[in-house]
Image 1 (cartoon, rainbow, N blue to C red):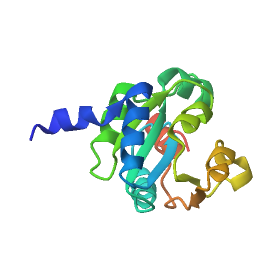
Image 2: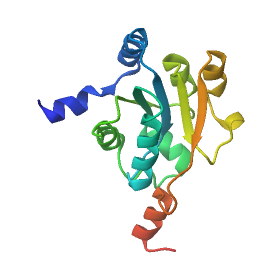
Image 3: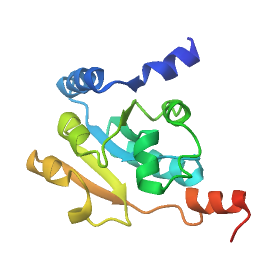
Length: 164
């Protein structure tokens, strides 16, 4: 098996993802979706994503583009570009699909994927989770997961920049 080709095969365009998700769904597989910037991957991300993957059969990750990340996090972000971020996420064995989105929120992407389980961090309440209405209306679940304490991209960025 060509490992690099396998990683690239898990990075989707929106159009190709829609067809793949429909194929998974027709096979009775439970689709889990989460999203984020995933800048500077760390143990907290791995913990969160592995727990999300445990909630179903296929894990789909929506990743903010560089432009979208910068708009959300500020002009110094992202530190790692979207090509690197998507490839690193796709390299995890428990990740089945990675797709970029450029909008401020993943609402449009969620309306296309319509996952069985929508996952966000426990710093959100269900009423604050973008796309929860879509998933719940279809009979799906919205779950929150606690983050692994002591791990955050912002803390790593501060350490790199030499500030407290």
